[in-house]
Image (cartoon, rainbow, N blue to C red; front, top):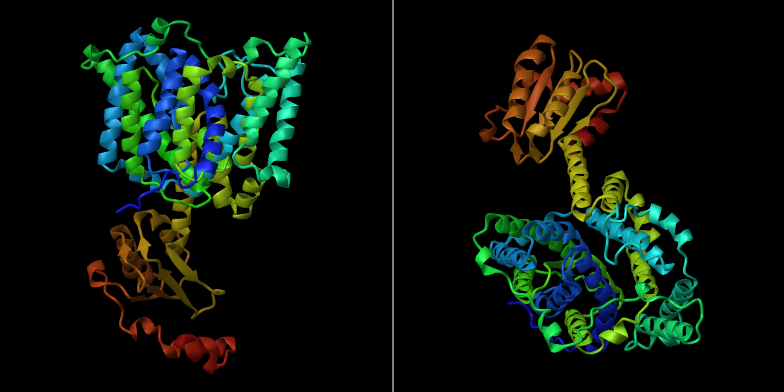
Length: 551
């Protein structure tokens, strides 16, 4: 049985981290809804459900769910094709049902096969994306929406070209807010007496400072005042009717529409894979290294998407940006996620006017520091020191995540990792002890535990390179499995080429199931006396050979 968790055990630190995640999640929810062509409040609804429902049902202590940038293209295309948001919500409902089924089928276990270097490459790639995307916002250039992770942007720029566009759109007020926020955030982590104020996170102080500074600019009539287009833009209902209009329910008459099912299955697959990747990443970020049951997570995501669709919300996944913000803010349990969802709900109901005073530059500064922690130089150095088999998949995943998207980047990293594994297995299929080829030398080929058909080419090349008049011992004592192709290869070598070229072959340790007969001890004259003859020619003492054989 799983250990029951006391959600209120770390309320002080969880409230502070939940507050930080709320500040990060708010503009992301709005930005992703805008990019998806959906009502802005649909992003907020998804964030609230991700915090309250998924946060409660999930076993992850660090992960935070909400609308994901990786689904924006699917959502935008579906809403455009269907021509009605309520029909699209039916697809989200179906996706939730499918995810629930995947959880019961234990499909979450595939997350165990994601290599560490690929997961770390994905995290570092997302860190680089955050930095590239938020730097323009920090300077007051907000042409790209908050939450965008695409290399090619909707306005025709890309993540690099938009950096050069900054120089044509620098807003001094935003820069001053960014510098102020940066000083506060760094000081909050470095200055000893400030670090002790756990209940008040540095991000909240930075946000309040940004609001106050901009209000001073506005009230004084300064040219540094940040305009409304560079602030958080949360819709403010002016009447009860407008508020009621926020809730949209699925069009259940579209349940049998094949296109709705195709979209639902697409969302379920993409959202599930992204969630599993993010859960694996969140577990790695967790300072306590706690393990999340991924099958339970799929069920939680399924329920979350079902509830979100019923209330007019976007589909959701576990999201790395929010999860990393949660971890960096000191979250101890999933109560932090629940608090972030509660704050989202309370804020949009009670203080939307105040939230709309938050400069995007302040939030950009918070996110840039999160991005740096995900892609810090020490991570690159760590994998570089581990060698090319660890570094190449790591850096390939990072570059591909930045240039394409999360799923394609991870896929490339997985393919490269598999190729390296296959190469490694080819080399480790056997050990080959060879000395300088002198007439009478004995060559040892010791087969590994598993020798598959993939090793055929390497073993064939080795057997073909054995010179005439040699003596060979092929040892299978340690093997558990040898492919039929390899057994045929060894048999053909022994019966054909060995006889033609006077190569003495001794087989040892081959199981009866291999259908390959072991040689008797005296077979082919590969004997102790033969070792003594070799030693005599090489001027090696007889006692040395005896000791080597004993070992």
